[in-house]
Length: 159
Image (tube, rainbow, N blue to C red; front, side, top):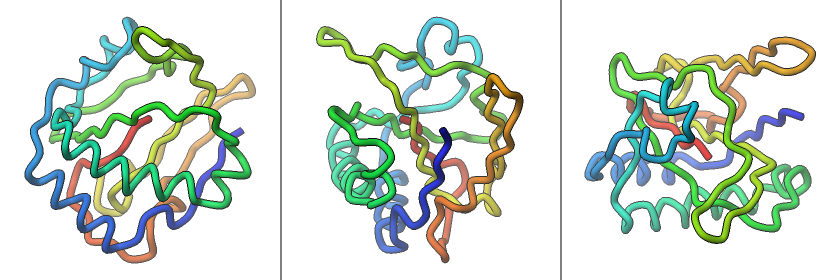
């Protein structure tokens, strides 16, 4: 099942997120990738614990309060998200999200979530292809965006 949520974050929240990204330290995205995904993952992930904590408060907080998310996900546990950016030429190729997450106390991850922090009109991430048993499905990122945004290139939140 694929669900697209509208208006997860407001414009003021997106502005604050962009401020945090502007002053943040990033590291190679391969750090969090599973064995097979390391071959196709070419991005950078946020590496600043204080900024991650503030982002989690805003982004995860809004997500878990979103009525459609609550109806669809019924989460028992929520993994700490990875905040990634894509500079010119970076991409995350075809891959399957790892179903087992965590270190030490490992757990199954039955739901994969991506929150786009930019308008698809201002990034190269406008559409995704989801490969399913019944074929390909083209996904537009447009429904997860607030109505008016002032995006900066390359920011997204993969979970």
